[in-house]
Amino acid sequence: QVRLVESGGGLVQVGGSLRLSCVASESILSTNTMGWYRKYPGKQRDVVASITSDGTTNYHDSVKGRFTISRDLDKNAVYLQMNSLKPDDTAVYYCAPTFPTATYYLWGQGTQVTVSS
Image 1 (cartoon, rainbow, N blue to C red):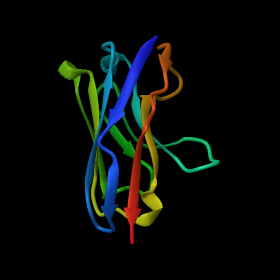
Image 2: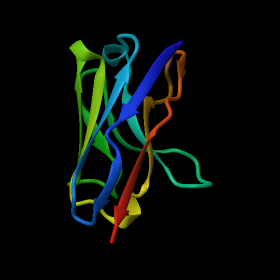
Image 3: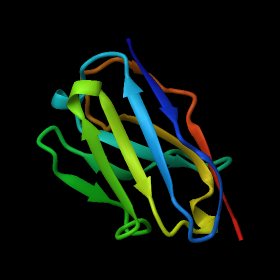
Image 4: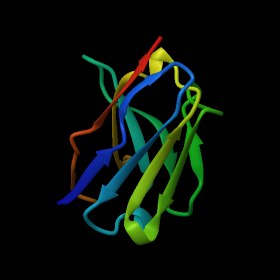
């Protein structure tokens, strides 16, 4: 199973920026659409940004123009640049392949983002 490790979260003020990183234990980025998921307490994970195997990006309306997803195939890494952060962005963020996928993976521990007002 592929392991995913997220990092880069933290406490930031409204309007601030963070850059999240996710590293996969195997080379899966070229064969999967990778997504960054946001999870609020008691809610399911929702995809906020994704990048396809050919590099096409998509964003949830709530983050368009503020978040940018990118990847480094050589490092098996996916990034999420988060700008103009809002209190509603406070959540735990995970990365993983989006459905459907033939890749067996374990969810990482996620990284907590907290935006203070």
